[in-house]
Image 1 (spheres, rainbow, N blue to C red):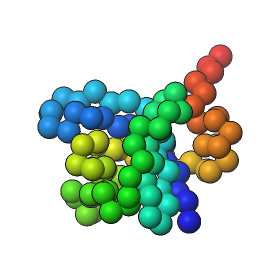
Image 2: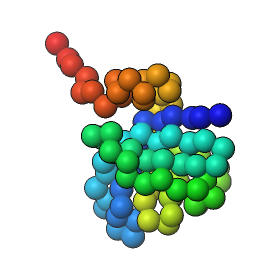
Image 3: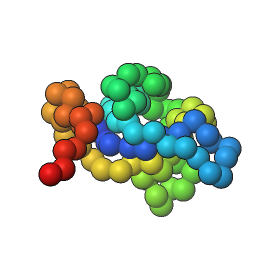
Image 4: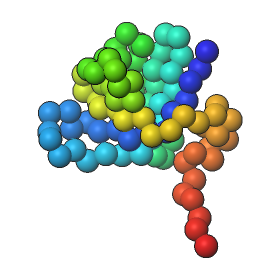
Amino acid sequence: MERCYKVFWSRDVRKKKRTYNDGVVLMTDNKVRLYGSESELVVDASIKSVYYHNPDNEDEFLINNSIVVLIDAKISKEEFTTGRVFLPKLTS
């Protein structure tokens, strides 16, 4: 089963003040993939490389102990595959 999430991610694992980027995480039963805001693949890793440092909060985790991920919202697979999630929201 695939799960898609709109996320904020950072490579600044050790810093207190991190710079976050927009992205999408696609999780399957055995893989985790992080895509950046331009829909480029940032990391493709085994699900075993995901580490929840606070088991009570599954909205924040590490991938390969080098990327911090904060889940913003769950999205549909259709939003991801069509690219709608990467389009800027227009306000009037």
